[in-house]
Image (cartoon, rainbow, N blue to C red; front, top):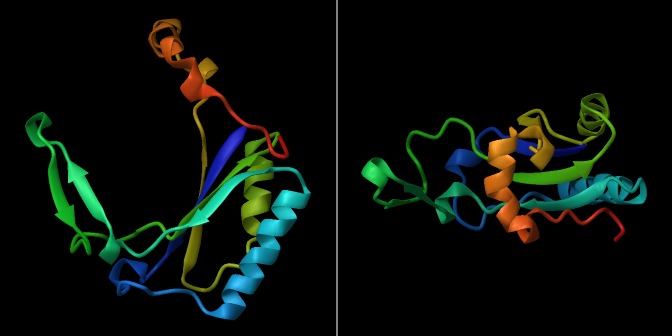
Length: 140
């Protein structure tokens, strides 16, 4: 089962362009990432620049509208993510609990939808795009 662990650092919604964590936090996070990798569960992980460097594209009436960051209405934003492949939701929560997060950080754990989670008609339509559904297993 694949899960995405979403890092939500409170206050990051107002961070200036170029804001970066301190070296001690990065060192602790890299040790955590290495433990995920050594356990063979890490599929992918990355940090994200602050919203002040991003953009949002909305689709009112199916027409794209672009708004550059920062976003005044943002209450929570993502600071980074991990994709892990573990046997259960409980295992994903256990890995999230081991993260060296700070007082202002929360990790949301969400299971990634697999093709078999969808009804047959949805699988039939999406089945035409199997190349997009290929999952690389950790260490592969």
